[in-house]
Amino acid sequence: MSLTYSKKINQYILIYLMFILISSIFFINKTYLLEVNNSMSEWVINYEGGFGRRGLLGQLFLIISSSTGIFLKKIILFFIFFIFIFYYFLIYLFFKNLNFNNFYVFIFFSPIFLIFPIAELEALARKDMLIPLFFLVFCFLYTKFDFKTLSFILLISFTPLLLIHEVSIFYLPYFYMLIFFKLKTLKISYVLLTLTMSVFFLYIIYLLSNSIHSLDNINHMCEILKNNYDTKCGLGASVLNRSLSDNISELFNLKLVDVFRGIWIFFLGSLFLIISIINSEYNNSSVSFIFSKINFQTTLIISFIPTLIPFFIAVDWGRWFNLSYTMLVLLYFFCIKNKLINFKNTYLITLVNQFLKNKIFFITLLFLFCFSWNPKAVYHEDIGSFPIYRILNKIITH
Image (cartoon, rainbow, N blue to C red; front, side, top):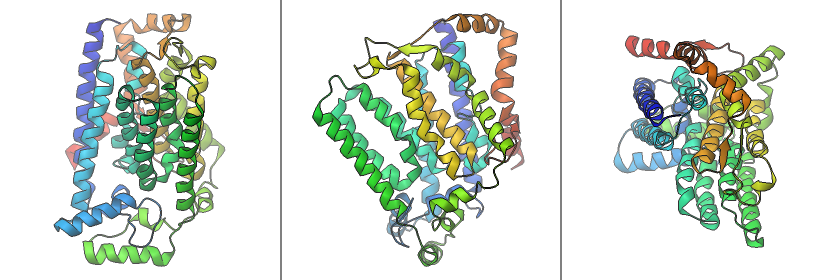
């Protein structure tokens, strides 16, 4: 594609990201004090009731609130503002110099990517957002450090991420892919370092899975929040006493139609990404010896498979669609940007591009594919419609 075309797409991306950022800040600012805001209830989880899952950031927020006298939820709100701004700024930097083709446009504007959290406010400002944020930072560090340094950075950064949200463990393979891309030779020290890291991360998950709160622990934490910080516990705290089997039991009512709908939603939202992945191959002159022995598709499948696990243990499939797709997109374009893969102009690509050359057809398809629908938050819900219209309507009527 021409530089002019890519420049225009970059302008549209900037406008799109600004719209998402402003909408995100608007909605969280309007709803952060509501008791039904489940995202805020996740951020207030702390260690006052004992060590357990998802308490690290909440404990830090309590310390800041106690030291400064600032209302706890106000501190969390400003932190979320910062996360929004930082995340979408990194997204812009990540994509701005990309030489966009028609396929990349559909990948970027997919309804299961950036627009999902404001299309489904139940998913807005969740801790999940920290996973792709950390991954983006890791992507920017990739060119600056070698295998060992990146491994230590991963060890230092991923440990708090696990303590913030244990679901991060399912997305660890994406981080590993980046450090493995740095391998020039296979040394015993590198193998031992990777194994040690992996055992350490799994040990943290083991500790968290064996640190289930009792009702007394939860009540104690909630009393401190209410009495000392004028903040009520929400849904996030109330589920800390659940075991893995308790979470899985929520899916006992899962029907075959829900499974087929879920598969269809993810397939449709990922269609242009899937086509692009199928038509990409490693640039053997750029990748390490490990990846020259396997194909690119195998690499992404290995990274993707663990991200299917949350679908079997939690009902909010919309968030997992969004997170799985986001991580795939970031890894794919990381490889494009670093010239680790080549996009092949196969017969299928050429044929599709012939249709997309027609501007009216392109705009119509883009609207239908990207802006006419969105997945809902929970697995048994049907799809939503016209997300941008509904977002603007919510802003106007709030």
